[in-house]
Structures are given as C-alpha cells and as structure tokens.
Length: 178
Image 1 (cartoon, rainbow, N blue to C red):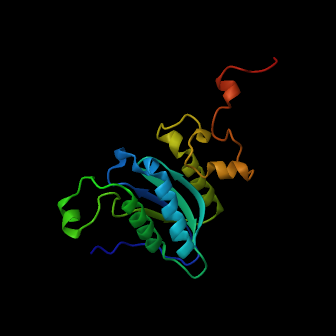
Image 2 (cartoon, rainbow, N blue to C red):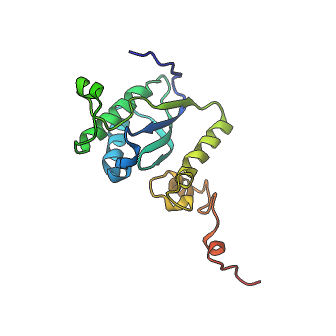
Image 3 (cartoon, rainbow, N blue to C red):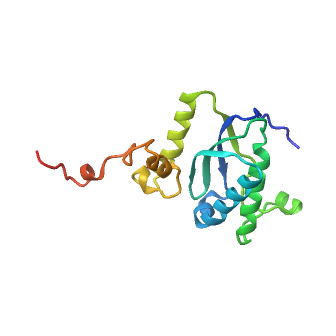
C-alpha cells in the first residue's frame, strides 16, 4: 500500500477536493440528498465543522475544521464515501483491481487535502469554492448554483448575493434613471 504524505494537525482547518471516479456521470447532484445524509450521519458520530462547501456533478470542494485533539479527516471521508456509495444503484464501470477487491467504482480512491495556513489562505479557498460552479460553466452567477455554502454566507451577511457576478439589473440592461 502506498504511504501518502498527509498533514495531520489536530483541530486544524483543511481544504479538500474529492472526485468521482467517472466525473461526467454527475452522481453527486443527482443523489444530493444521500450525500447530505452521509455528511450529517458522519458529523453526528465524528464531529467537524463545514466552513464552506460546493457540490458539483462530478466532484466537491470543502473546508472543514476538526475538533481540538482530532486530526482524523481520512476516517470521515471514508465513512462519507462509503455511505454515499451504498445509496447509489450499482452499474458503474469497475476496473479489474476494484473487482478483485470487491470495491465500488463511485469515487476516486484518493482526494486532495490542503491545510489552511492563515486567514488569507482561508479566504482564497472559500472564494475558490463559491466561484467553482461559474468556473466550470454550470451557471453564469454564483448565486444560481444551489449546492453551495454561498447561500449560507449570504444569509449570514458575509457575502452579497451578487458577489463575483454582474447584478441582474445591469445584465438585463436596466440601468435605472440616468
């Protein structure tokens, strides 16, 4: 087994990118409720705070903060991936390696992890998460993607609804009284 170098700091804040094995399938938004349920179930047993998150059809980005004294994000991702996979009907392509191990072919085996270093790093990653649906051409404005913590940030007054976008009035040519 490959020994990947991971940074494990108890109570730290981490940025993650987690991908489906077949990104074009779009299972994450097609099965958004089972994904939400998997997150809630794991959070109830192994607490962590979701600081920001976006779910796209074939991958997701998240920033988590783990409790003091706890650095085991790998356990949490394994449990989330397992719970989600059990909720998705079978039928995905399976490599010979996965067949031999009795694995599903829903997720890529690995994920990207980055330890957030400071407030500036945190803010850059939050912005990246919220802008990602626009970057991938899924929507024209951040506010139009439903599977994003962006909406929570707006409700909390941390971001404006037209953040990173052109206000609809300007887009539609309504410039008001001139």
